[in-house]
Image (cartoon, rainbow over all chains, first blue to last red):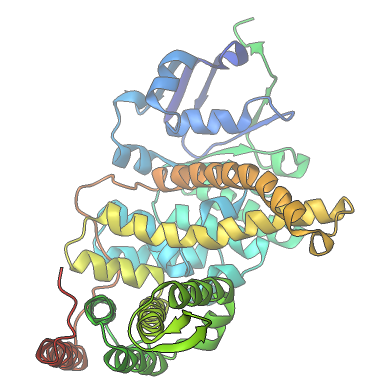
Length: 221
Length: 250
């Protein structure tokens, strides 16, 4: 078992988002979460990637997240990056380099990956996302769909074990959506896992399991 | 030429030009420095006219300050008298010209940086042993200038769509509208910066004390030659200014 979430609870002050949420994720699995706005889907992504500040987490997050039996709180930034790759809903929030190649190199550079390996990972990610032609393109000249593919590729260069896709198909056209779904399927088939957040019923069809999130729900009941 | 020059050489150009601009106190020397700055920009294919167009409001403020300075500083020969008082004197004119030239040199040197993309500049700063966090912060802060402008324009459009034609408003009302927009614009930018910080965090920013660089900057013969020439020219300028007693002393 790759990921085990035990009785996870999140609140913002007195406002409980979810409580006692437990689930497991195995290799090769696509687990989907759906729910209304405010049901805590994106917050769950932040919990899983340890994006909340320590002080906030201490007061507002309960339960434990275990990756390969290691508690998320005991993992270093590099270990978290090797475990989880989060793709944001809006690629404009995620991308900040002027060029596609620089954006793709950012994560492996931070992770101190050797230069030749970075180059190999970039080429592989571009090929996986079918955007080889955009390698040296300027990001601000790309369409929304292309930006989303670049955002996915920029996470694939980290080679994470679990890909977390936060409503990544919500802003793009049908043709690109099919490409993105295929990327997620192929990622899971390679022995890794995907956590997918989506409202789109067609997206949910590729998932092995779907968990419905409801605001304020206590999943222990 | 634009792509071949190492960003460190461009940084040296900027440092030398701005240093000379601050140290010189002679209109002729400063004019020459300004011309050198413009020539460097032309060689680097910087779009000077576009930059002037973008900076027109800032430049008009500079010209206004220069005019006020020329009228308020008295001394030397009277050029335009009004009755018994001097409206414009040679000293006032000289001070205002020096101010205008100094600021122009600083602006022109700043334009040199625009010929290099942000990432290349980071690589250059890292090679100069600047900590990565600081170099990245410098580059990312430049990225936020268009973000800020974009946020402001979006809010201006939102106001226009509610039937307020900002162009037709009187100046005090315009200022009130702008003041009203500043707070949401800043909070919007802060929110975007928080998301950006998260994006950096999930991609291992500061995960390791050591960081790989995809591109390794290497200084070529042209770069070394330019460094040598620019240092020699700067030294000649300083010697000339010192000899003629027109070097600013602190």
